[in-house]
Image (tube, rainbow, N blue to C red):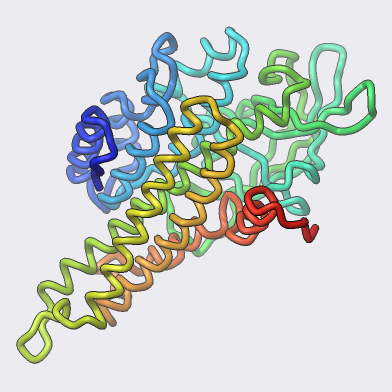
Length: 377
């Protein structure tokens, strides 16, 4: 879904990724697509050139995910591995961490998951109970996480924990790299109705011992580092949702052009045509908001990017859910058949309204951050 507001370079990238997506399509082999996306330089397009990346930013990476989604083959771990973890390490990691992780994240040979959500805290960083205490030679982590994607296929998980501030005694967020097979790091699959290549896991960290160099960045800048990863997560979730919405809309439009009742294509009827037209408008508006958020983030405006990223994620989630719902309705009974492949999107489209932050929490954020209204919590 190219736009006149995009640079010629972005338009060319969009066309190239769209062609890649079309070659793989909805029945894609995840490992093959991941490897080819990496080989072509798209997977690490946002990471620094000196560590094997493309030297671009979130604008380019979100475009890649959107176009793959529009072709019916989104790579969910792009939200996590290069966008969240790669960004955090590139911005705040030590030189050793950058050399150890960024080239692999860029070329697809290494993958990293992200663990923030907890059973009793959701994604509220202020209520996270996973704690890290200092040991003689590093750190010890104890806690639980839920709904963590792709832990089984990731080489490590970037875990959000909390350490005690020696001056105040208060707990503050910090990020730790936990390799997959670390002793005490246990994972249990969560049975989901959602059909996806990436499984969801509950994690238990039972006195997980880590070396000192597992801490990412500055211990005193944990909150800044955390939100440096959460804003890209929201933008990439918007890209995921817009791509899915575009895919569903394209399927519905093609069907509405061909399906005839009483000798007339059903797309000629306004009851069918107008909701599909509305979906296109809403998806394009969400795309504009997403590109604004990415541009703000890439320019270094973290505060502005926070507001825009939340708005983009909200707009994209709503547009996606409505596009999928209308696509299924357009196809009628065929919309629920395996042949047309839309039914799984009913559950998948809800993800963008729920994760990584619910639509209600975004409305709370906009209410008090953008409108200046008092908090209700």
